[in-house]
Length: 383
Image (tube, rainbow, N blue to C red):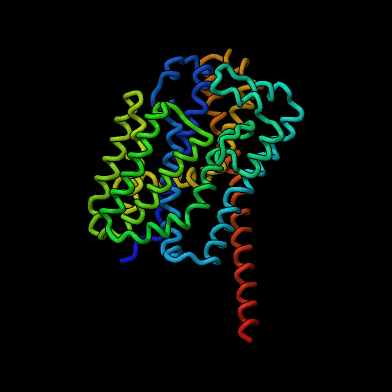
């Protein structure tokens, strides 16, 4: 029996992950606005950066779901079409956001100074933030491929750089996964990939922080591989597994929630994320129903645009209005906090409709034209 082609709850869980990342970037400013210092010690808010690892696992799983069988044998035209669609998925929006930042960088030296401020030798590279070499590196989305730290622009775009590296590796990884004939072997390799990642994070003292740059590419690789292998196991397992799906998703949510009561332990959340995605793939139970609800699906659809723009908006607000916001009372501060969140959602929605979706449609048209040209050349050659 073929697996479902559409899994709405996985769109929803992407929205939840983006919201969690937003929280980890916003809670410092929110704590000042609301005069609630306890927020600065919240493990839930601090660990929101782990939503990026959920993105990476989900990306590998979804790509296998969409392109299942296409990479059993590597064929040039399939790889080319894949790269065309992927290019238009990430580069146009990234370029749009970068270009939108240029007037700010040229006209607001105070903002540039704030972005270049650092107090820890570990972040000395920030002295080069918003530089021309950093712009080029971010425009090409190669900042996580090398150890060169040329300065950041839109900081969250490091995840796109890591994701593009995953796209480049995907055809080979997918071909390897397609050769696995046992779901047990696929699950064992999936767990091993996550276990290696956790061990590397502990060994490099990154178990309780958010390593980006080149180390971000390492995070992507192991999570991305886990997602690919997870889908292979899902594809090979019998449909009878769906009767356990609700328990699996509830167990995954409970596991993730439990880790958030203890420092460092959330490094194990990658196992919870993977289990959650596996359970949701069967589309059963209350967690699935919640994640496929209208508001959550909407958040999932705009999640990429929301994710790519929110950090910039928070930074601009903090620079331009930070002192004024910190002197508000609790009630107006509460209203402003939700207004900032709403504005970030609004910008994400606008970018989704005006940039992201048109870019994806353009990518599909380009792919179709290339395929039509190939077909015409083949006909002429046969004649």
